[in-house]
Image 1 (cartoon, rainbow, N blue to C red):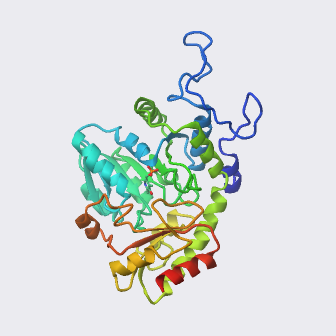
Image 2 (cartoon, rainbow, N blue to C red):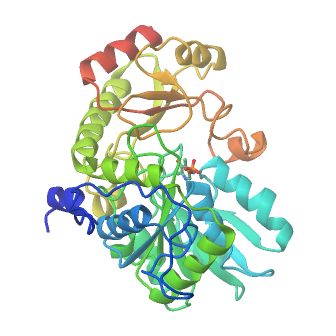
Image 3 (spheres, rainbow, N blue to C red):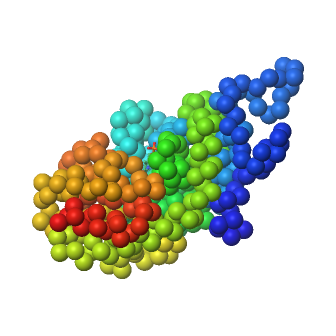
Length: 379
Ligand SMILES: *Cc1c(COP(=O)(O)O)cnc(C)c1O
């Protein structure tokens, strides 16, 4: 099935009871049973809900995976993956990643005896050196939030497969339209569905996709035991969002490229972080594993002035100053004080995340209007 058809038809079966073409919102907590233990496969809505089942089928299809699970948020999906581990286990992960993931690892799971080793994952030999007999999981983000660093997923999978170490990839920034980690050898794909999959800034949700039934069963057990499940209304919204993912992503990529090139030529702008540039250190790998370069980019002002950056951040009119990304409307963000404030300053600076860095989530408005807005804000 070609991409466009896949996104529109993924998981979509007419409702068996009425023929409704759109999956109904099964707003129910429980299901009436014919006799004790005799039911239609639905017992209690934390364990199963038909709207969620339809969405989970769609998630699997769009990530070329056999199975998928939906969670109440992206971090709840990540939380479920770490709950596969035991005290004493080690996780090797990136030193440039979503602040909330870092907070979950350091502030919640470290105290349960799980050790997280942060390395520069763009260099596969650095990952290799960090692996010990206790390493059970590699956690990758590519492109990273907010520095747009790229890690070669297939090269890391070649390292983890023979050692039976799980490889999980946070694919939020790319979306399934641009990158499919399962095809590249990853065991688990995680999405903050809140972003491109939902696509309309109206829902918080997460997902995990996988090919192994054993892994699916273990994660399903965690999903129902820990209970971070999304409600049926949210599942409905995401089913609707997925139908236009391909159309939206093409527009995000086109606008992202236009704005990246415009910023790069601007006399007041210093470095622009976007993997589509040939001089981006991860460009070759991005070109190999992604279909296009996406609508996320970051930049610093040439004079690296925090005051100037603050002025730009509060002067845009179309770009709204807000956390989050991946919606149809453009957002501007200051990682150091917003999305990545949970990472200590020394850690941030060491990993190249300067206090004057500005991140853009380029939406699908007209590119000329977006450029005019940035022009008046940068001055
Ligand atoms: C937003 C985000 C998350 C967390 O997802 P929530 O839906 O906000 O819980 C994880 N990873 C990345 C890359 C994100 O951008």
